[in-house]
Image (tube, rainbow, N blue to C red; front, side, top):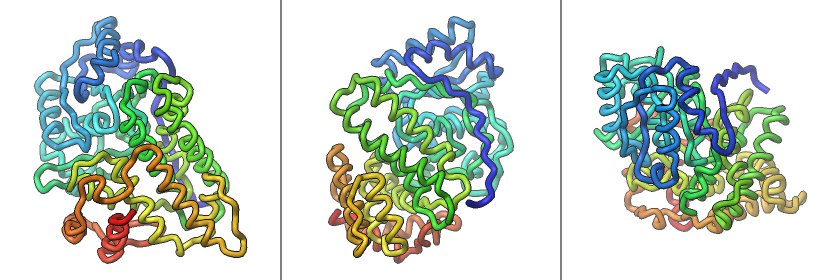
Length: 394
């Protein structure tokens, strides 16, 4: 295990009805005027908006609203939020929604006090040195942004989907996690969220770092929980227990408690960002297409790790004479799991076209230090194209 520093200062309020305490939590962390950031009508249909605004009003907190945040969050809403926060002297950002809303709130928070273009933080021209405090009321178990040190925004100029440099400064001050708020989600969103959190764990699990038994087992426990809970949540949307498992698993998958002390990969995420940039697909859907293809391409790098994944996550029988067969079975079982959830597993299923693959590779190259990437196997332009070719057949 490698040396590491781990700091996760977020307060988590978990359970049925906890969103009613949102106002008190904002007060606790110094908020006096709130920019409330949310997406579309779902938070009003499921009662989350009413509960949160009532909680703010109950403690006398004024709030300004920024709505209309989309999946694969756009830079336009970040610019709009920065101006709203400045014009109204907001001192707290409250995200009501899932990863796209939270990432937008984070980007607004660390940009309000900066005179230049917020995109400077993403290109490396500027460094994040402070932020307005951000709080979260989570309504989608997926991205893990409610506990993470990162955010991803699509810059509409150039259609660039990039992440900001990771920093503990942007971890939320608090996150309210009520599994009931996820019960009204469509099956597709629930499934997409499950794939996203599973991928976050795999990005850490597939590592070259030796002697990481504890975090290996933590990863495997979370992966098994997601594999068991996701079908139950889809089959019985109002069942609290699997919703609760998924909501907490999503946070643990991405607050990095499973990734400390080991070199992480993140190649599948980097490749998927091009899919969602080109086709505006759900992030989880894109990962369901990319991750099994990446696994196929890199499997021979460490066959025994993929065999372990197959045995410990999907219960495959170990073929000691031919471990590569077990490894391949595990990858096939993962793809089958995605299909059973109703997720796409081929490029065409998300509206992609094989003829776009060279353009996606070229687009990736526009990112500073865009190649090579990946901590498990280094991925250059040729390797990325080969992996994307594997997504054509699924």
